[in-house]
Image (cartoon, rainbow, N blue to C red; front, side, top):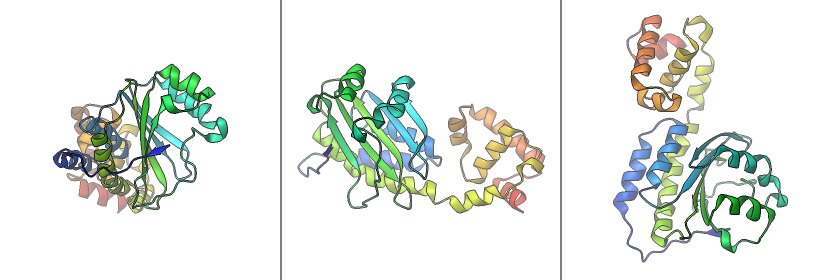
Length: 254
């Protein structure tokens, strides 16, 4: 695994980094935040495929997001190849955060030994280069892993690697906010949703509203149109006899 070293002699586009991290900071739901990172990274570097793995507090994969990757490849990796060769190509292993050194790595697959994983998995996917980085929660536990893959025989350029190295610590700080909401979530757990007369979908949306998630992000995370989201919100407010999110929160927790 090759770490990334800072090259101070490059012409770095600081505005690109600023615009990228600023746009990511406007997203307030974890999966949507991660998808935003992937889409924004396209302005900083070139890659052909990408994925995100989300980990629970025990380090187990609990969700994923794939871009230009067939789900069967992810399943095959998680269920088999991540466990072979003594975990050499596995996921995070007792990894803890070092705030001074972002967790970023690059692999050139043509330089890796010819193993079962490389021959049967990497070659079959046509991968040439992979770049990965990890974001942590407030306790320093790895919670979200990103992988950017290249099928073209073209290395990640030095300026691309440097911009990612500069952006990741900022993304990591933004990422922690999703795990600073535990108190809020504990309050959500106190709500007796069955007494609200809300439908399952309305309950889901009301829960997100109370966590501060915007209607636009709710639409993206639930894969529904914004007009549908607003209709659900109108029904929620009507059933709960409120007119604002703050009133809704007070009513549900009161």
